[in-house]
Length: 563
Image 1 (cartoon, rainbow, N blue to C red):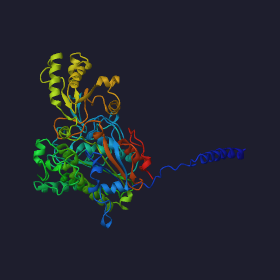
Image 2: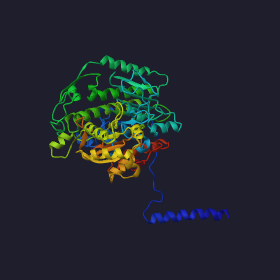
Image 3: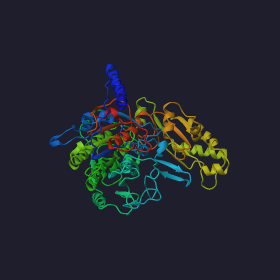
Image 4: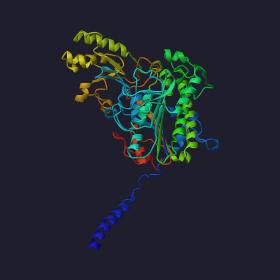
């Protein structure tokens, strides 16, 4: 009897194999090979790094490999790694908070709770910053931000670093950036340390969320002492030659206070350790130096489990807002990005046992950015700016006219940011109004505004009466009730709100499309035309690291790029 059972088990498998072979299909399709786990994941984000930068300026980057075993920056990654020129965020409004919350969580804002950088908190009737936490305390210097403490409290998902620790691995997770929200949101809830720069004091700081002892590590204190000693020295940023020839000679930048502080064109001269210096490659340099020190002090890549170092280079964003992607400044900043990434890669190569062959490297961006609308308009494109403050004044006056003036200094619309308009819910309740009544007033005003393509409201979202196609999809993936606006204006292509030379806050291609490079032993080198989404990064990494995907991850494993 046992012999018969064994035979019945064997025959179907053999027949199935013959059928597969006769059809020209391998009997056993080889899955991607899972190589030895890396000692380190080096995760790099460049803030507001458009997808075209790696293509436009490719011929100016450092060579992939140099003398003595040294490596370049972008060319090394694009040559040795799996390069997706077009990776996408499928978000309604692409900006720093949502982008950095997405990259290592694989989650969309409608679940993980970071739809924008700032919102209006209804219980307190106050502005709420995306990483604000009144229960946390800033360490290093007294916070110079409007809020006193920061942590990942408002972020509802988990990250790759969280899942490493949840799986029991003794991994170290460190996250660094000039911007607090960038460092905090990449690090997740269980990071050993997140560090960012207090720009007024010009000191590296952290939170007692990570350091319950209430004190920065000594090595950070030494870096801060060096910044203080460096303060006030003159820095001049100049260029030679014509560059790539792809940048315009007059990008028509706005002559605002920030731009005037660093000058309207090359050479740019500023004082070191100042807010203005962060718009120059100096900001990249101090971030890279911080990353080197963190690698050294934590021994990242030298422990018994895979460690994670996440670094976001924020200076690219600061300069892009001031000059726009058409400018020579952004071309030169991209070359400075290349130099600093090369420096960091070579340090990692020397520091991690076995070098870069034991390191998985990821490079991407938190969002892209639109060309300067003034430059586009001067070149026959439909582009411009929307005056958010003027819309607010008109709307408030109309609401007062229709529903009456509120007591004291109260407003019907107490807060607006990025065309997310928030109503005074207490006043609506007190006057026994329906929110939809106010929504419709504001909707009409917005739709009469040049530069506004669509408007939707909280009620529209509840009833799924949304703008069509791409817009509907992005709204459903982004809108988070209670944090997203009660009414949201959606810009026409190539329009931004007043304030900067160039910006980002839409789901159009220029804002949502970023480069993605994954390099290291597990990946097949090459350029991939397949569509990749930024939410795919996290599950790809956790697949390699042997953990669960992050809790709210919706991405896929980029199996075509795996060996």
